[in-house]
Amino acid sequence: MSKQKSFPNYNSKSGWNALLPARAANPALEEDISVDVLIIGAGWTGISAAKRWHSLSPDADIALIDASEIGEGNPGRNSGFLLEIALAEDANPDQIEKMKLCNRLTADTMAKIFAEIKGSGQLVDISKAGTYRAAASAAGMKSLQNYRAFLDAAGLEYDSLDRSALESRIGSKFYQEGLYSPDCYLAQPAAAIRTLASLLPESVQLFENTAALQLKPLSAGWQVQTPNAVITASKLILANNAFSKELGIGRSHLVAMHTYAGLTPVLEQSVLDDLGSDESWGLLPTHRLGSTLRRTHDGRLMVRSMHSYEKEAPRAKIEGELQHRLEKRFPQLPNFDFEHCWGGAVGFTYNGGAVWGEFKPGLYVSAGCNGGGTVKGTLLGKLLAETAHGLEVPDVPNLFGRASWMPPEPFRKLGFNIAATLESRQGRHEL
Ligand SMILES: Cc1cc2nc3c(=O)[nH]c(=O)nc-3n(C[C@H](O)[C@H](O)[C@H](O)COP(=O)(O)OP(=O)(O)OC[C@H]3O[C@@H](n4cnc5c(N)ncnc54)[C@H](O)[C@@H]3O)c2cc1C
Picture: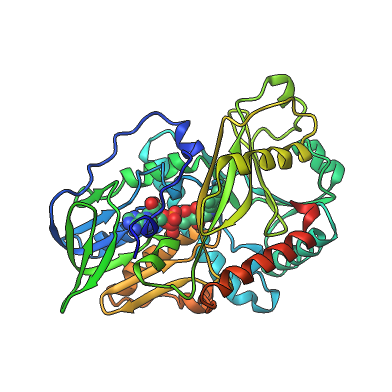
């Protein structure tokens, strides 16, 4: 197992984190320790698992390690959509009771995240702004119809918008039609994850810049090698998403799919005046290779798009294309360079299902966020801690899917490349 591959090590800084004041990271682990439970990955999933473990076993010694720093790593690199309902791709009106339960669990989790962040008194840009989903072509319209059918069947509110209604709200003529759903929060993700980490119970030891390099089973418990020390733990939780496969779990189920974002500088007021009536909004694509957009409260536009398989692409390769995709939607923008441009890894599974549960004695895993794991990860991390305590929990594989098998390399990469080429062709007008 190569050291580089067991954890992410991005070339570009997270744009969201760069907008925040500097933060002093917790020290890395330098000495061997022994704990009751070790959680690998201090993201949405790992922080939630740590908090729930502590609430169930207040006396347990809990350690949480992360290869990166809070806010700079993957959990602070996303587009900041905190969905209160299951993603449209999961929406099957035939299974509406199941979807309603997923939505209820997700909405309850989101309510707790919001209450926790607001209750902290820390300044975090987070609000229930809702989200647009919009289609530019026949391929997108088809998936918009499926989404509408799901919203109808689930009894969820939405507004339908034609091209001119969308233009008047967001200042783009690019889309033919869209739906606005109120059931989504938009957050500054690096600020949100910093705050959630700051609310960990004091007794949880958090070590940043501490990567798990290798796992070893013991007769009772687990030993984890980090760069400078060894951790021995009775129970182990992998909450490191795509990278759990590099530690030996989910190798046949997970891919680290990289995706990219660009954030403009704060735009001039005269430019903002030409960008519709909504001062802060988010838009999700209808095609899975499409582009996510945001306008932030401080007057920037963000675009998230493009993918690369298992490797971060060089900034030079993605920046121009991201810029092109934003300009296509907003030809009125004056010439600009992104202030920040970065990538992050999504734990992708073939069927969108999760890698979740006890995989070996005392080894629990929650991975495979599939591009929408902020709220879902928070829920699944909590449920993992509960299941490890023997509590009865909702049937996660049935509700959220179980990740399906993928062929080994080189067939896997070949299959992805073929599928991505076909899908990009089919959805080329949505890119
Ligand atoms: C550009 C982009 C935009 C996205 N937009 C959205 C969005 O708007 N909404 C949404 O819900 N999701 C979005 N996602 C996906 C989102 O980032 C994930 O769903 C979410 O972060 C999953 O949380 P997590 O805690 O499960 O995993 P992660 O956020 O991946 O966190 C895993 C943590 O484990 C650490 N780690 C990994 N390997 C090791 C190791 N070996 N040792 C120690 N630590 C390790 C990492 O540093 C990381 O901090 C986006 C992703 C990207 C890249």
